[in-house]
Image 1 (tube, rainbow, N blue to C red):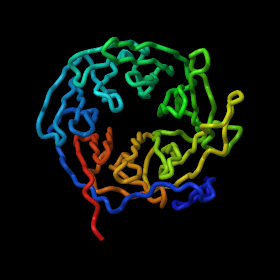
Image 2: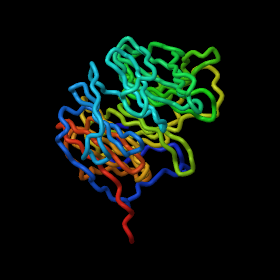
Image 3: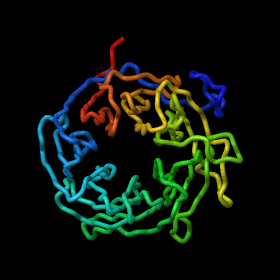
Image 4: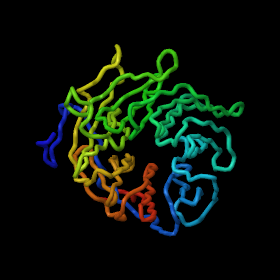
Length: 362
């Protein structure tokens, strides 16, 4: 990897995988730029993209219209709320408290339905995965190096949050994704500090969390650490092939690694895969040891969005090209994405809402 230049690509797919290509006919249109939301620390869409919910250091959640012009409602809590949002495509919302408790509410944060202390310390990552028509798997990690899975049931007859399994992981989680293939068990993909492997957990026959396999993201078979994964996204190729995109800690420029996880292969004991990297992209996205990139897949453009220290970058997976977008230039603290819209929170408290304009005629 040390011999790669900026435009080099490591590839294991022999050209067979057709990757999504950035739609350059799409143009970004700024809906709003504001600095009037004081002490904002988090930004999330609600109801698709019809409302925007901002959390602040004053222990409040403020819900605005889609352009941040009008305050719809405001809620105060006894603690700062960092992790919160809508549960997938449901009408329910959640928030995590600083003592490791998960709370579930109706469409707004006013009627609490269920609450459960999942961890003894602060929750740093949480994922929801659809299980049934009115049930979800809830996967979470905390700063005390624990991984939990619970089952959330929300129906007219019951509101339940039931813990299923909990394990200790060797180091703190840096990114987390929960995916349901065509099976009844979730695949939980996790990356950690001081580890260059993507690990996958699932529920075994006894209902306990179990390590299914590892995917090595470096070529050293006798070392599990040379860089870290700082952000992880799930998306699909045009033919439906699922893959994961990992943003690395490489400096001075980030790399993006495209991974095809095994789905149909039988597992006989815990295996480490060394052949699941489809592509390893060099980028022009600068970062330092302290950078905390936020990567999202933007469906309207069929490409990746990366928020970093000096603003927002785009990445075309097919052409392996990255470029800086003409957005506000400051450290990105949070990004949320709807089908064609983004809300971005910056470290200087600037909040921008961007939409994708209609394709340009040729």
